[in-house]
Amino acid sequence: MNNWIAVDWGTTNFRAFLMQGKHCIEQQSEGLGLLQVEPHRYQETLYQQLETWLKAGPLPIVMAGMVGSQQGWKEAPYVSAPCSFADLAQKAISLTTSWLSPVWIIPGVSCQSPYHQPDVMRGEEVQLAGLIALNAIENCRVILPGTHSKHVTISQGAITGYATYMTGELYSLLIERSILGKALPEQQESQSAFLSGVSMAQNGTPLSHLIFSARTRRLNKQIPEAHIADYLSGLMIGSEMAALTGCTHPLWCVGSPKLTQRYIQAAEYIGLKLNITNGDGCFIHGITHLYQHLSGEIA
Amino acid sequence: MNNWIAVDWGTTNFRAFLMQGKHCIEQQSEGLGLLQVEPHRYQETLYQQLETWLKAGPLPIVMAGMVGSQQGWKEAPYVSAPCSFADLAQKAISLTTSWLSPVWIIPGVSCQSPYHQPDVMRGEEVQLAGLIALNAIENCRVILPGTHSKHVTISQGAITGYATYMTGELYSLLIERSILGKALPEQQESQSAFLSGVSMAQNGTPLSHLIFSARTRRLNKQIPEAHIADYLSGLMIGSEMAALTGCTHPLWCVGSPKLTQRYIQAAEYIGLKLNITNGDGCFIHGITHLYQHLSGEIA
Image 1 (spheres, rainbow over the protein chains, first blue to last red):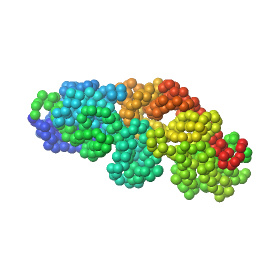
Image 2: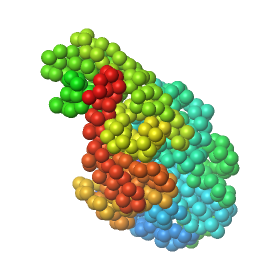
Image 3: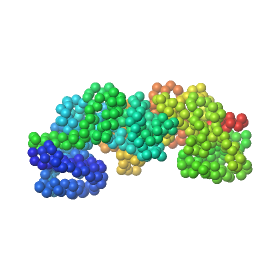
Image 4: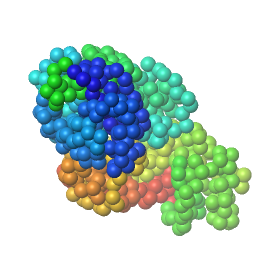
């Protein structure tokens, strides 16, 4: 298998991996997300970022993320769940750059969530492909924590449905912009405040009432002022995990070590067993798997 | 009954009413909330605001709101629910100004919410006193919508418990600062989008997943771009009202005409009968009622 390039191009970040067969031999990451680049300059920006790697010739490039959205470089329309990873490879769109690199853009996945809301993902499907391929999993529930956390159901190796939780974005807004974060002293880590938040979130209390306890428990000194951020984080992550109650599938959590650690603590506290794995590793493995489908090459 | 002055002094606004017995004969409102005034200048600011009314002599002043909080002028410690309105009058703190006006500050009310969270209110208790006195109500559930909506249970004319919902603050954060409000065109009113949001919120869907539908239903054009604000408003108000399911008490909503109209539309849509009444009217009647207790005067 020859060299090729994998790219994760999202709203806020541009990340690229120089691949030799299945192995990543070099990588780069920059805050050059789609919001930072003018739409007519996507191709030029891509070339500038990859120039060193392209000196040897026009390597194939496989891309995922918001680059394939309506506002991205070229739209790769959502594939509806249920869908297999072979479906995603098959529905990838292709183009050729001005410097003659063949490019594939992996489509995102749309679904009706278990709560009957339309839902969308772009980028996470590649991590899922990697998780499934790496661990030979057929059936499981996967949490991909972050700004917009996803809870995904995998059945017989295919994505059958999922739901997005705005956990990370809500947490940031509340701690930075709401009364809950107002005039807080410098925050310290506190596992007990975090777990206390997780615990409070397990009783079906409406979220917009529950979070107000980050104010009242501060006023009445049940949570020290320096631990409010971790308490609120526990409320938000705990609320998200409450949705897993009764799930009998094996549970996986795919993400950065920092985030997955929080989720595993929360899971243990409420009696759930969570397997964790690294998000970057899953991305690289997943995009390699998809590239094998696309190029017909088997590594 | 002689002249006296009622003051509602909160975090962002200062409102004062010149009273003749039970009747308001003049009023003023300014953005001179506690956040805009240095703590050592509360008394001076009060005098400047009321100067015209005080020319005839040092009228009695009855105050409510955050002015009685720890960060206010003088703390009127919370009274724990269950509590009657006579309890509130009895626990009011008094002081005399430098110009010899007798002042009472009405305390707020604390409770354990029905969801076992500590909760607090300051200012709303006066509106509740007015509502109860005006309508001769013994038992009811009262919604006081706003930045921090309160759902209050009144039993035998006393406040027995309540819960705060951060409906208004969450709505503002989401529409102004989150991905849900990003790059929206000028918004138009849409009752159908609002009611669609209310309806979506009645199925127990976790809030942090539900609100993401303001993005996905915009992407798939189920809700027009110009109606996203009203759809999100419906999701938030609908979620708050879902907490009333199964409530058998008469329901009241106390607030500004604009807000109570939204709540009555939402209530009708989900089959609840809501009585509405004006928040300012309740405040004036409530503080008069409390002043009668404080001064021993019966109008």
